[in-house]
Length: 311
Length: 245
Image: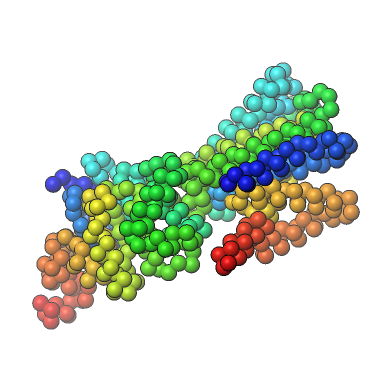
């Protein structure tokens, strides 16, 4: 990144951190929290789904590990909140290691399907292990912030997004990022370049899982009560992946753009059309896949390069 | 003269087809060996066995004294075996420079060092003009050179060239052949090629190995091997034996 772009990124971050000075209503802050939370989750997805080109449709597995890790270690075992939070992240990374070891043996749609399967196994297990998770009745989550929680949750989500963005920038410019892209473009060529494709993909998934689990912990605490369908459901996985694809998989800012658009649209349509927002959501996905396969940022970037090349 | 690559009694079957059947040969340092043979003779399969893309059913493959059999492709690359693909496999959405940098990243973790190395290799292969273009949409001749550039950037001791001049116009093929003769300048101590274009083979190869239906049927210096009846029969069929002999 050039110095100019770094300045823009820092300025944008500062502006986002200042928002609570002007927005005071809890509801509005919570909507903005969701916006940034999904931006961070999509950035995390983008490392695997975008840069490495491995379509993960089971990110809820890691999100849910973070949520249930915090809740269960704290509520059931009495582990202090910060340690319980960290343990949730560790468990998500462990889950990523196990899932990746198995799923990365498969290529293309088979990989995507297996990620769905793993997330579903966790969700159904959580629904049925009622003595531990409370099943569909749910379990109460600890409060991370004592006073003025809506502001602190908002700030946490902005920080998480900034961290995920910084990690993406760092990876995109490093050898590791080039390795991921080589694997996406042609795995045989990557192998011929001496790249341990399986190990590289696994590392990306573990980083992605850690970021997702932090998001899961924040989400659980904000909503105060979690049930399996909510934090381990396909809805979460799909929203994360769709935001990334809408904005542009494998681009730096695409997932942020996608998450902001998708979550804003969700919020607007939810009030306007009630349940029909899911329909609009579906139509949107079809349109993006058909007409914007590179996503918004990817397409704009290509048009921009073409213009500058001609000039 | 020590053997850099030793292939001993290697076989590979695909169902009922013996793609490679009990093949043995060795490659010494400083040598340029070409593997020739009709389509389907098992040449590419042999390369895939050496580079770990396929495990052999039988036999051993040693590189610089180390056994390779069963080790994955990235290990072979790390040990110093570079390869090109017959059906070119560029990283389509990356630039030519980035494609070659990915080869260079095998020996350095620093992006600027990889870029420097990649530019040197591209200069050698006379590809500087296309360095910043995306790899998709480039003509085949350029993509064939890109395969060599990427392999060369990994600093291989042995480079396996799978039909790098096939499909190119003769002038282009001979120009590339001239560059292949200069590979030792880049620390490449042995070259093994698969090639159909005999003009190039005769010019570049010090020794040839002839495969037919998976088996090694002749081995020796190029001008000698092409006169042998078994080789002529494999290429042209038995009835041409007397005419050319």
